[in-house]
Length: 204
Image (cartoon, one colour):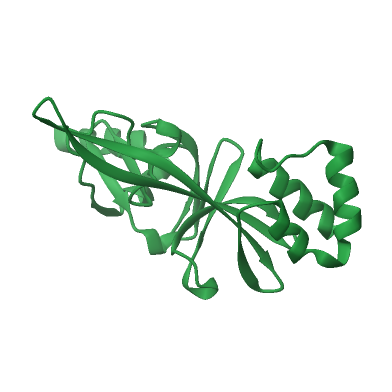
């Protein structure tokens, strides 16, 4: 009887998130990684939604390990690494992430959607790990890095500056230049905003 009550309490607590317990064991970051961490925006836990095995789970607390490019769902008793190939997408705040990769010849993984129209723009979050000796002690760090891409006419183009975008959208170069000046956009100041607004303008 007590065992049945315990089971009822467990399933009542996990509720609609039961499917998120379908995964593998997550290996925690070694303790000597004391500076920064491998997670998205350096936040151990974020809140959002996850589409997993084609089921949408809302208001989920999870970790996005950017270094390993994996999602980790946990509760007080479980830490579960979700199966990447079964994740159709996820959101963090208002940011949408989708899986991309082999089809476009880019690194397989999760990409933030900056613009989703006829033309699409994406951002890839990356973290590199480094190890160094500090006063005879091994210390690990995670350094953040970003890459931007535009999917144009079914081809994925890496974007590193304004010139590449103007070259890509050459048929509207003059109008785009005016749009940039009018809205005081600068790639170096905010590449996410620059790419998303220019791509959206091109799609008009």
